[in-house]
Length: 89
Image (tube, rainbow, N blue to C red; front, side, top):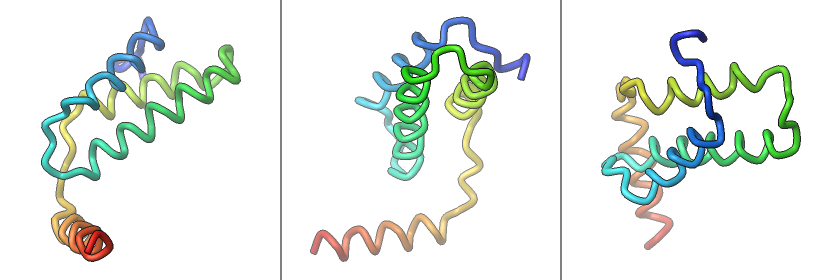
């Protein structure tokens, strides 16, 4: 986790959440996961600001948002998109 260690966790989470306003990602599932992860981590850290897992969780978020996604899930993405369109009618 040293490579992805975070000095200012609040700043990282705020930056990630702000970036969701204009993410530019055509596959909605990736920003949805990012938003879900950052929001959950923010809420958990508000409840447990001194948790022993805090550095690891922040490093994981940092890696998740700064490493390119593999995006080898084309079939799943297409299936999810089709189901979403079907639900929206």
